[in-house]
Amino acid sequence: MKPYLILLLILITSCQSNQGFEEIQVSKPTMVSISPDSTVTKQLQEKMGDENYFVFIDDVMWYDSELMMLVDSFEIEQLSTEKRKIKLIGGNNNWQIDMDTTDIKWRYIYFDGSEFLESDAIAMKEFLSN
Image (spheres, rainbow, N blue to C red):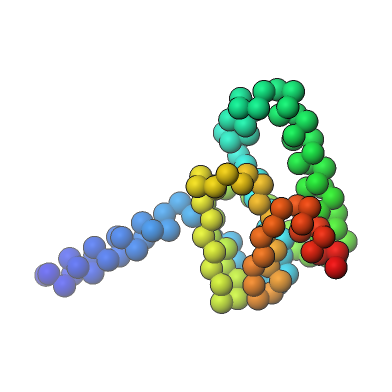
């Protein structure tokens, strides 16, 4: 009976470590963009004030669209999510991201077919352009 209890305890704790994480599997070049959900954007708006927030969001959306147009022109697969907890799986790499533990609210992660690279929209556009 004791071995079964130990096995059950191991199974429960291993399942809890990934609890709430959405798994995203990629196998070919893919751009994964992670945006904040409505709760986070509302917090940003309260923190920045309406005028600064809308100027900021306008800039973010412009850089985002510039990057996504470039990604589209290269016919790179695009995945977008507002999930706060994701696990990226690609090649031999796994990357667990918890958006609640970072100050970065917009994340761009490029999978080149074997490895992940993360950058902001401006640097990612420059990287892909070269």
